[in-house]
Each structure stands twice: as C-alpha cells, then as structure tokens.
Length: 440
Image 1 (cartoon, rainbow, N blue to C red):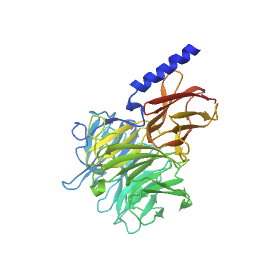
Image 2 (cartoon, rainbow, N blue to C red; image 1 turned 45 degrees about the vertical axis):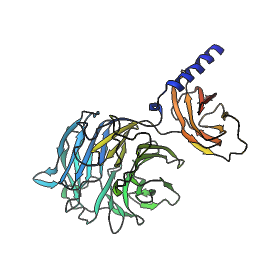
Image 3 (tube, rainbow, N blue to C red; image 1 turned 30 degrees about the vertical axis):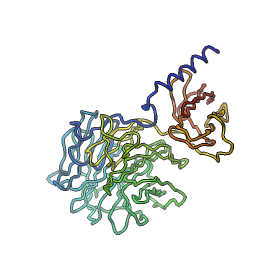
Image 4 (tube, rainbow, N blue to C red; image 1 turned 90 degrees about the horizontal axis):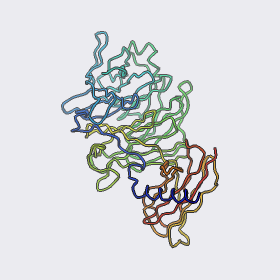
C-alpha cells in the first residue's frame, strides 16, 4: 500500500507539471469565426441551439442591408453551414426578414424569430431540415416596439422581450396550436411589466414557472415567478448581478444561469466574458474571459477562439456545451466544460503561516458536500484540484491569484462515485496533497 501511495503521489506531481490549462474551466472547442470559411458572412446577433453542433444563426446587417437566418448541421471549425433563408414564405404569403434579433428553439425543433418588419412578426421555421423552412405559423404583434429576445417553455407558450419600449415588458403568447398563429392576428395572453431600464436578455424555465430578464447597464438579473394561468410576480429576494454589461442569458436544466457580457453596444472594445451562476446558492461559479484587452484566458484570434469583443448571445445545449455568438466576428463559438462546484470564501488573515497549509477537509468521510480549508502566507497563484485514485483530474475548485489568509472552499461533487479522492493544493512553487473519502 505504501508503494502504491508513493506511485500515486508521483503521478499527481507529474500531472502538476504536464497538465495543461485545457483542463481548467471552460475551453473553446471551435470557432467558425470570420475567415474560417465557415463563418456567418455577416453580423450575427442570435443563436437557437437544436442539439450539440446543430443550430441556427440570425444575421443582421442593416448598412447593406442583409438579413437572414442559416442552419449549421454537425458543425465543426470548417464545415456545417447551410443556405441562408431571407424570408418567411408560406401559401403565397411572404414576410421578408428585417432586423431579426432574438431566436429560440422549442422541443419540436421549431425556430421562433423576432422579426422587426413593419408588423413586427414572430416567425416560425422548421429547424429540423438542412435549411430552415417556413411553417404556417406567425403572429403580427403590430407593436411599434423592437422585438429583442424570445423563449419558449415546454407547453409552447412564447415569451417575447421588447427593448426601446415606452413600457419595458415581456409579452406572453399562446402556443402555435392556437388559431391566431394561423390567422396571424397577434393577441398576447398578458404582459409582465419590468422596472425602467435597458433589457436585452430573456430566458424561461422549462416549466414556465420562472422568467429571467437581464438589465444591460446595471447587469442586474431579475426573476419573475408564477405561471401562465395565474400571472407572474417579481421575486424581490432574488439578487444576482455580474460586474459587466449583460447582453444575453440562458438556463440549463441543472439549475445554472449563463450570462454573457460585453461592451459591444458602446464600442469601447474592452472585454468579452460569460458567467455561470448557481441559482441554488446565488454564487457565481465561473467567469470565462473570451477576450480581455491586455490579458485574460484567451485574447487574440485562433482556431479555437475568435478573439473578438462582441459577444451578444448565449445558449447551452443538453450536454452543457456553451455557444456564444459574436456580432463583429461573424462568429459562433462552442465552449466545453461544466460549472465549478466549489464556492470559495476568505477569512481575516490573522496569524499567517510560514508556508502554504492545506487543512484536511471536514466532514471526512462525507456525502453531499465537504469544506476544504487552506492558508497562505502571502498572495499566491493557487490551484486546488481533485484527483481520483487513477490520478485523473475530476474537478478544479480554485484557479487564480488568492490573498494571504485562510480560504474555505465548499465542494459538492455531483456525479462522482463513492471512493477515495486526493486534494492537491499548488500555491506558487509549493504543493500539498491530502485525502478525502466520498461515501454515497
């Protein structure tokens, strides 16, 4: 046993030397950015994901003008693009695509498009085919306000966010089974009034019981709870805010909210990030720097990142892959990874140790979660990793600079089996390893 432990510790040290940044957080798998030969060719403003690597992009370039939607099938860096659809056409009725913004996909693979033609139509296309084909469903909202974002719940109710409106609001429409989608007469069921602000992001839980909107300037996320039958009320106890301008949001089915932020509308060219928020705890678990001038995880174009600062939409597929649309790059990026499960806090430095100290986790053994403590004598670049007995990295709980003092990290392993796991702290040039037992 002692020999085996020595071999494992050596393996962990080798991983520490050879392990790359690719194991940390989210990694950009591919980007069909400008110049790849598989880009959108014009400014991209929204995405509707059907399944992994299958999605529809909308293009909105009003200086030419050129407005279209396009399907990508089994997308890679260089392949997958279909043909552009420039209009909704059905039974001799034609609506040209004009300033399309938000899009959403439902469980049937139907694509709902916020189109800002004179009648401000919500247009529906079949996204299951090689190229989008118009379905007989559309609603003329006949509003003077800009249709900005859209989402659909599992019952088919359609939620539409308006921006640049006298009254900031979300209108809720019935499913496409209602006759008005055939006759196009556009009667919404009711409206959700929003506080004054500039709203670009909207997402709805699958059950339709929670509606989230993001206010651009404050980056405040508001949540409304209720139902289509009884209406919605602002959840005043919900308080989530990111520290940069929020342009779009999305939900997964694991209880995480994804927020993309950028200065693209102000043309200040500073950063492009997405954030992951645990809705159970309210904690921000991840911040991914897609571009940050003079720094960040990725800054500069490559095969796996556009390196641009114009992220305007975000969606997550059922496998947890994150798709981000860049306006100026004519691009979509696919990021792979999963939300971090560690939530870290720091206490007053107090008496500092002479070298980094990794304290055994408590409780140990543990079931649902455990707390890991470590102490730093000075500010250090820290990585706190979890390995299984085979020496394989299964979780990264901390990665980045940390202040001097005692730090506490809560670890909630979601899908790991019972067994022995090794916690490795690397602080600067120093390393420490301890053992934790997970019992299901």
